[in-house]
Image (cartoon, rainbow, N blue to C red; front, side, top):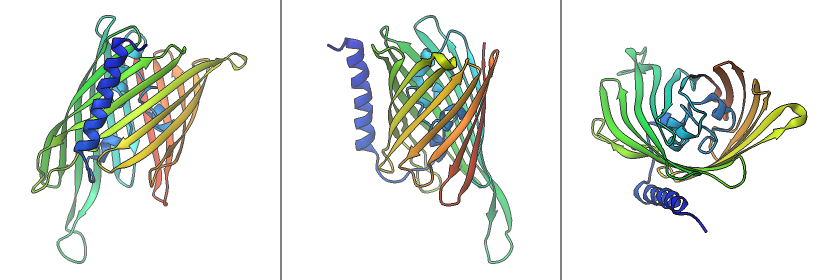
Length: 305
């Protein structure tokens, strides 16, 4: 029989999924909220809702803030996306006693060299469009195996001389199942709204993710392997995705990763590697885009104190 804590987790996630599905339809903006901020996760198909803990959990699932080892963590990320699109992320997490954790995040995307044209011929100039998200996250353990988390974030979008702001929330939970090293996670991200940009309000990409992650030893190789899967629903676009990935970690020093993002027009295979040295972890992800759109690169550095 399920305990009260597991029932609370299930009800919270189901209500958030139902709210997202019924309240939102149509296309969305602020797509940087869907690009992923951890090179480790991006290399594994961006399946992070059950896998990730610590600082990257501020983006993927705030309940994961409490799943990391004791101590604080900082994450810095840089992403090279389409054309002149670049994205940076700074996240931090720190424990608050044994049953709580706090996180902060800063996400910034720029699209530079957008040409201004008022007539045929040479461009009149160019400008840079910007998206920004600043968030604070909290996670609370409600039983030995269930954790809930909440993120609140302020959003800003600027295009040429116009700008707008808004507020959004992420609600997530994690369950450490009776199967050793098998975790289930769920999150509904980007619940909220934006103010009008000129005459129209940008619509947030409200997402629902349900995922699982499993880890086990490979004694003969002195390694650990991990696999993760996320089922994602984009309520705005009425699209579903499957994200799956795996990694092999040799002596907790060197990781090789691969993943697949199914259901998206431009996403597909991804791969990457990670290197750990003392308190530092360096990760790289390579994710080519389909339809000759080019290649994307994600670099991240995490520091554990």
